[in-house]
Length: 426
Ligand code: PGA
Ligand code: ZN
Image (cartoon, rainbow, N blue to C red):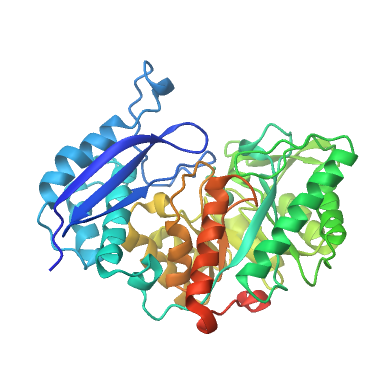
């Protein structure tokens, strides 16, 4: 029997240098650590990330209250709790919190415990987390690699938050990662030759001041070619518009630069722009092309583009089964982004993945822009056969940590490992 002996939480730093919470769970002479990520372009329907708001420390961003909720409240309530049934543990924490958005204990506190306990079970059983979650797991996710950063993740002036490449022609994770890296470095060379900056944004993608959005696509396409790959065959483009960031709910307009000129677009005009982009470029996936509460717009977007392109809901769905159920019923999109800290427990995250797959939707497990060296998302994607993973660029250790974990898992699975490539798209 595996009984939880102790929980210890501490304030650590994330990849942006902001505080976040780390939890260590102890039991039967073993321990396991989990670190919680943090977003910047957060959806307003996400579970609550508890921050101290004390301006005298870390500009108000401290997480000592969340740590205290683990060290005092959860530690007391959960010591002696029998682990192995993740749902029972997570439900107990939900009951202790008692709020709809985890605002009493903090979703960051709850998630830290949820992840650390899942890791402790794997540790005690001497297996990888992915195996502990599903002993029959074999599918490796196709990566969405973010090599150009804009929006809230860089000061580049690019409205699009992320321009990504997807090496669908790869035969394995190992090959996909090599292809992504080669494209990333070729993009760096091209930018340098063009006189642009080659510093990177929060997720490790380049953040040059390009004249237009279109120029971002063009130069990424060139980098794919220069690396020796064929766009639209070996490699496709994907992007995250993170449209909630440039939507004004009052005027119902999207403030977006087209050919370098700021326009105020209706939902229908925004959709027309995405349709044009998808006709012009080899785009396979569009995330948050519209804002988080523009349900009618999403429905229209699915009607116009959904049969051709993967339409991923991030801020719209916030890894929440209630919102996902509505989207499935309305046909508002066809895929979901999965972020553990949007909902706050392992169990609810898994429920959301399973609901999506049951409806024939794809799932894309995702990092946050503020990350740590924690690699749980790599194991989660494999364990639940999520077709895709979004974990940033091919540089910065908090991003490459996840790719490196996927390499380890692929090696461990050996001949049973299955990399779906193009088949990841329905
Ligand atoms: P965030 O960005 O972590 O800043 O929310 C990631 C995303 O929008 O997908
Ligand atoms: Zn997003």
